[in-house]
Length: 203
Ligand SMILES: [Zn+2]
Image (spheres, rainbow, N blue to C red):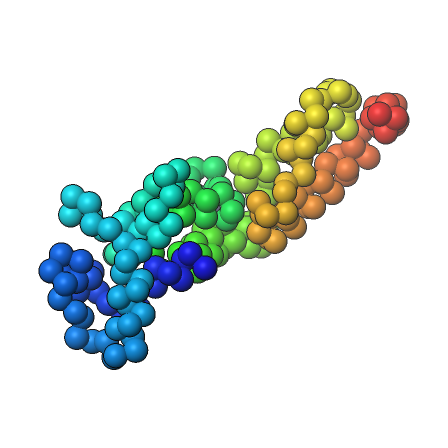
């Protein structure tokens, strides 16, 4: 696994820099740890004072900047999540393209628990209508409702496709929200006058 090939254990930034620059061996390592460390250190490069992870050395893959501090990592995660609350898979794609640190996937999961999931849980508990405020879902609910209300009988295939998130794009709480949104759209339809509902069902 490519990510594992960058696992340098408990070697610190300073120790690693000393090793790459001057060949100074970190003294915290046992003999067997040192063997693994030397092998894995070859997957890194030092460019203009910055350490990059570049295991495959393929031409089409850019070296990934190694983020050493918690602050740098959190900033990168926030950037990948963005204002639109990007899904986990989208975040991981972005982060793995540009950055490297050990435990990235776990950090992203942890971040999502405190950002999206805690928000969703709070909303559900306080005000059931709040779940519609999720920006990603709001647009989808609108397409869905328009479609069933007969305002957009022949939507483009892509906007229909966008109603159904790809499995890998969403975390399970979000999937529950989509189900809830669709249910709420159906309820809206059943509240409409019978003629409207009939014309929507015929499509
Ligand atoms: Zn979020």
